[in-house]
Length: 326
Ligand SMILES: Nc1ncnc2c1ncn2[C@@H]1O[C@H](COP(=O)(O)OP(=O)(O)O)[C@@H](O)[C@H]1O
Ligand SMILES: [Mg+2]
Image (tube, rainbow, N blue to C red; front, side):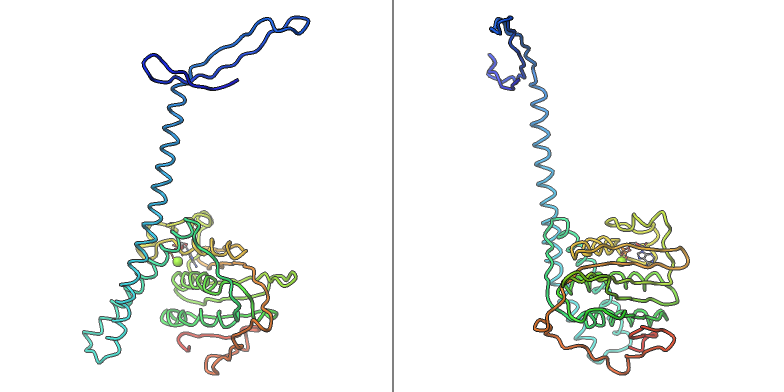
């Protein structure tokens, strides 16, 4: 069996697939050959066209990814300029009318978040997002990440709680920036989709094997909840629960896609439990190596006394942010 090409009289090539076998007599002496040639020229042409189309599609995909990454990067620089200038202006004496600049600043910040999401998403798609393991203090990272959300929660009258389970390692080696990004996305959603009640972040040690810790974080809210039929699709890129979500709550539907990919890249998974009308709880796990004492460069955090409230009715609750107290 073989495939080869034959030159035709008109100068073109024909491709053939031939098979043959030898007929032998009783003494095993070859006496005859039987074979057939199949013209596979059109199949060969189709195959060549297909592989060319695949190459073009892959090239276009790569160009699209590069375009997205470059554009997002280019847009980010002037956006930071706008934000910086707005901040400076807001520090000066402004009339009530000029204070509208705050709205412009808020919009610029929103836009920057969207750009950052698109940039991350295109990097993940292109397999170019790398983790950067660094030793850091877990509690400090959690506290820093939660802090900016207290204002948004306070404005909505939501309580923001943080419970650190006993046994949570102090220093670990993982990517603190990406972890903070997952927490920010999940806290942002929880606050966005809850009209009242509370939002709670829990951090616990899941298991320990050698010097590798598996950690389990969860972000629970008493918000609108997610119907069972949508529990899978919300993790798809650009997907929101329904078309009215973007109109009512804003957002691009990239946050969960990115967070779930990041959790995987950190050696864990992201999942959700939810009940419509009662609330949702997003969980994620990740792995980190326990930091050695030499690696623990950042001293353990001291909570400022004003924010460090230990509510008596909430055992295990490390700090409690009723509204805007923080
Ligand atoms: N805490 C939550 N409560 C209710 N719905 C949620 C929650 N978190 C996510 N969702 C649903 O999942 C969708 C996708 O979330 P996400 O990927 O973060 O996108 P976005 O926040 O831009 O809408 C949201 O639009 C919403 O429908
Ligand atoms: Mg979101």
